[in-house]
Length: 145
View 1 (cartoon, helix red, strand yellow):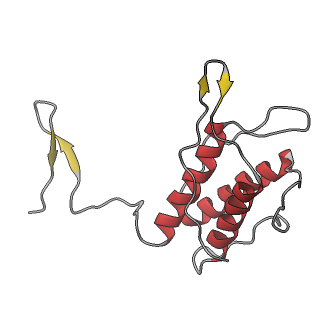
View 2 (spheres, one colour):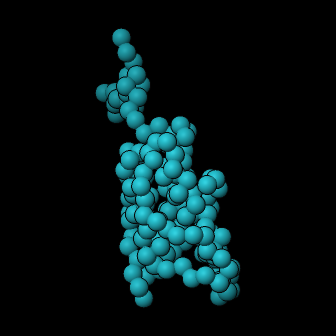
View 3 (cartoon, one colour):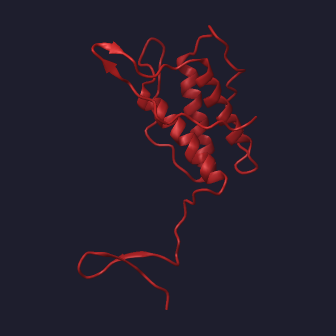
């Protein structure tokens, strides 16, 4: 499974009462699902995730529990990588549907995990460059002696 750059700029735009924002379709579903599978298959974390089935095709339905699976899988991968998945929002049958904010959160967290797991971001304390406040409340870099 290959990595595909996530869409992290989902938006709603209404112009003169007409919706012109983004639409979610089967290619978006496949990108998110396959990116999660990719992340789980990396040597670290190499996590067993919930099966999300095959790719969707034009006309296939996307169900609420599939978005819950996305988030559950991201939470498990994040936990293994030491990165918390925050603001989990559960979806239910005939209930709320994912919004553009939810899609931005899911895809942004995929990107964060990708960067962390590929060495692009470090979620650790740099003990050589600790920040400290000086007596006037300004941040200063604490230097080793």
